[in-house]
Amino acid sequence: MNYPINLWPDGSVVTEDGEVIGTHDLIDGAIWTFTPADGSESILSDAFMSSFCEKVHMWWKAKCA
Image (tube, rainbow, N blue to C red; front, side, top):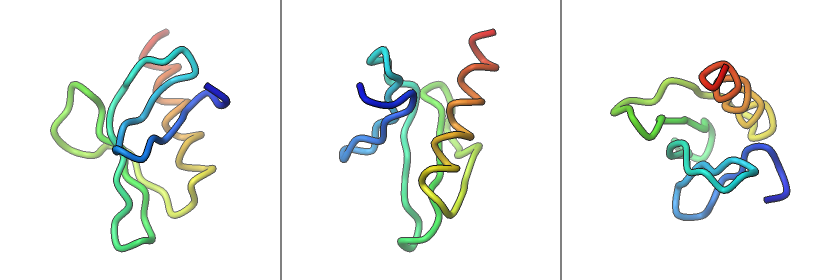
């Protein structure tokens, strides 16, 4: 993977190690949302892809700590 957090066209959110950690969605073409693999509701959102990916990365690092 090229980045710490990768957004795949099928909606998967994948770490640089290839682990699928959840799903993403783009609501109304404006807001990115993240739902963890073990969750049923989105827990993070952002209007900008780069800051969205950073939020997901920080969440993942905290979860793995």
